[in-house]
Image 1 (cartoon, rainbow, N blue to C red):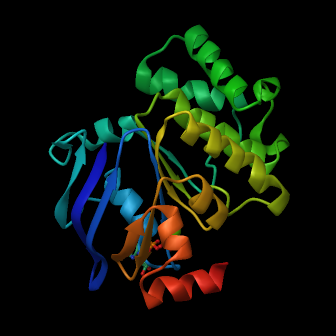
Image 2 (cartoon, rainbow, N blue to C red; image 1 turned 90 degrees about the horizontal axis):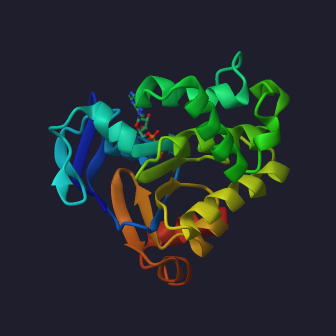
Length: 238
Ligand code: ATP
Ligand code: MG
């Protein structure tokens, strides 16, 4: 269970997060939707402590993590971005095994075995010895997901993981994210994919201008939005 409590953050005079609460039960998927600039990416960054909040608390399994070493939290939370950030000069398998060797202290052989096992799970074992540039964008994103999963995170964050993909490649990545969600992974998914938010996530949170405007089950938010702001957003994106 991951909880963000009353998170505030400013960049200079720009008060970007204005008292955000988010609660993600273990084994569930929370989707976060909202207009550009509403603070979604910043919230994810605060929740895995790439940025320290000005105020508020982050709890994992009921325990505040703000006093811990931030590296420890980042090991417990896997993160997948819009940009896949794969190392171009390494093979696909090396992209995954590198982190296992460095951060988990695995031997070269064991890290490669683990990398191959993760690639198998995302359907890309046959690409183990290819370079990222020789994969499609969708395949590269699945490698990035496999790399995050190889670290055996307790929670996965996705920030617009399909936004940089050609339309025909989006579904393969969404299918993988759906499998993960249905397999019981705890996930926070910032997305413009309203189909995923509506059909896969357990709880939807709509943010605007640094506040949570509405949060609840997808059926409730998508069929019966309570605020003009969410009604307006949905009529723009659906
Ligand atoms: P999008 O849907 O476009 O990705 P978002 O909801 O993820 O938008 P954020 O990237 O979290 O929005 O940005 C929220 C606000 O914080 C914006 O006003 C942005 O300009 C500002 N901001 C984000 N990162 C920084 C930074 N490193 N330094 C200064 N301002 C920032
Ligand atoms: Mg963003």
